[in-house]
Amino acid sequence: MKDLAVVGLIAVLILTPVSCKKQDVAADRAAIMALVEQDTIHFATSTSHDSTAGGGYFTAGETLFFWWRGPQTHDTALIEVEVKGDSAVVSWSRHNYGYLHILAQLPDTALQLWNKRLVETVRLQAIFRREGKEADTDRGWRLKFISLATGTSDSVNTVRIDSLRIQSSLRELVIRAPLATFFPVDSLFWFTPGEEVTVTLYTNATEGAAFLHTFILIWPFYVRVPFNYLGEGVFQGTWHAQLMPSFRFAIFDLITRSTIRTPDAPYDFNGWLFPYRVRTAD
Image 1 (cartoon, rainbow, N blue to C red):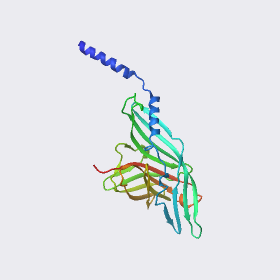
Image 2: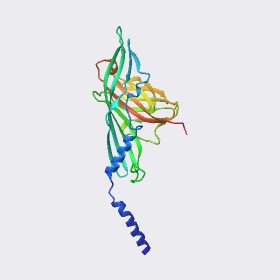
Image 3: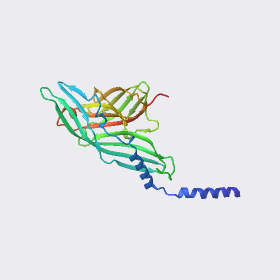
Image 4: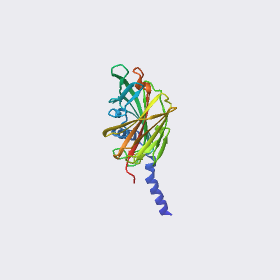
């Protein structure tokens, strides 16, 4: 009985400081913000990655259009961190600034270049968990889950992606809430090299145009695929996953047709950025 009492007393002495210790939320928040600021892979989103891509030309009647987004600048990202015990939710956003360029060959006129001011807001969410020690430089925090990112034009925004469907012979995925759909960073949704993938966008844009952009952040090689319009705001496109295994983003890009076809129409855009990985099957 005495032994039990001694063990119980030792347990109280050991557990009491831990249970009474107040969490340093400010230090945890600062550590997580530093990790986010240092991460240029998961927290670096823009739409400038189609600037060297093909697939940006099409015809409308007798008019030929070729369009691309130029290089972009960014303001300082807004990072909000909500810490609850050993878990934390991060909300990240920033603005992209640049120009949309359109070369238009109108009937019986010289080639025209239209430059449209581009301002976008990009958002994404992430979840961190403490897996190390508070004494560590990063206070033990690790990035565990990341959401899709969303992008919208700031000046005018009338187009909207409502849902996304990804299909192949090996897998299928439907997403309706991009900022509430999370993927583990160590086991992202993945495709095999060269896998044929069909993407369907359900939108409100009956007068829109949709494109798929895929890229790798550390290698300036981009792919742009126009979607086919199926009617009633539904767009569908097919592409083959890249051959090189890597972490990647795909941008599902929705704009109004007038953004490209009319010189005075404003830049009107909504996009979802989908994180995925290309890897060989186990």
